[in-house]
Length: 528
Image (tube, rainbow, N blue to C red; front, side, top):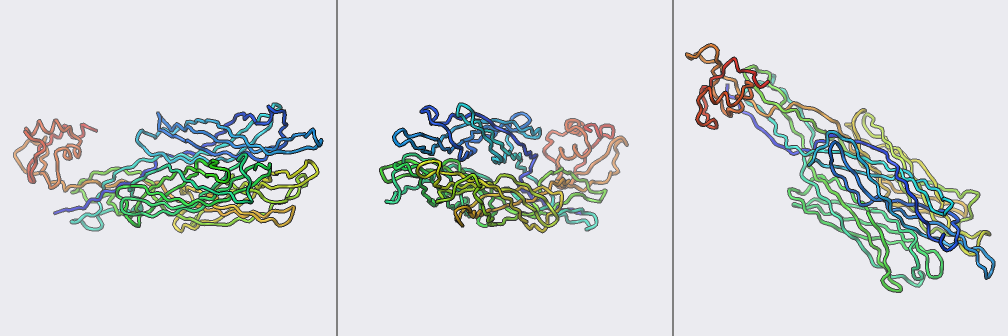
């Protein structure tokens, strides 16, 4: 019986473990204006960005360190002695709070890959008697640890009947490589006659509204557009907004990439700043971080067992995450926001943005239900009897969204990874008491299933016991094609050194087909 087989080697990402943890970071922020005797009138908004995150694998888990960049926009009240009138000015205060966390993942080992996604879930604050602001920020941290493994499996066997070969088809994402970069994006803006000189920047918000990725030979090209909105106080004490679009392009060198491969990528806007260049020119500066992972969808049929007592097999148990399917949808959420009775009428909108607050997902047969809530924020100018001149007001509202992402092959109980990004927030004033917000969301889902497969890595036809003048306490093994002394020792669970000594082999690396190897029955199974 002549048996031949084919092998195939693939590099696959195996998810070792994943954890989802919630953490609260708190601290106090000193607000400007208090030193000059001004009283904090109202907190308009508190924005938080997660930056400078570092994650390393330590003993039994992942250590996470980062910085929360907090921006507080608030009104202060001032009494003019000249005309005995109340004036409300808008101030801005920036602060940093460092955080650290340890996520317990006993399976994590040095050299493994870390996928970390940190999302700001909630922000609460309270003004203390000292006019300091006490903040508490809830973070949701998703951490996955994976290992890149070279898997070598027998894929075809010739010389046996179909009934004797047990096979299983695997859907793998063959790992090609990953890379990340941090890059600066910038744009100079000339202020026209409608915009006075900048006295103080109060708030800068931005979003990557478009990102496209293209694989080339040994590289990934990334093109994107970022929309930025700058709220500032001019030299005339009025509030103004500058809206700009910034295009950017980056290339990441990645050996082994070919056109048409699959790219999983994520752009994060880490920093935004505004610099004054001259009396009428400013520069908008941003720092983006891009992470790309390139894979190739690969279906492979592996041999998991041979049902023939004349054939001995070697196996390895492979635990992997099989990608069942991916889905991506874009959806526009329209919501009307009514001004509360305690707030003044809308005169004009200065700035409007939104963020994902809560997010849940449910895996059903044939698709994913994604549910969550949005926090919408709008700055507007008003006129009221409380103070002289325009007054800036911050209006917040919360509204829910849900969507269905069709993935035909997914089933209840499978694992899912969800990302929801805000791509654009726009607004329309319906009347002086009603604002309509429109939020463009992009939702991505990847469904996976953990599987455990015993893959055959080697097989050999076991020779019959030959009739030779050897004591019955010995088995005589006839060397077959592909045999090594180490394989024979492992097959009969006998120590390699013992096998070499008993057969008086001067060169244990040199075997030839048909050679007879003596195996003492008393030593079989000695290695367990």
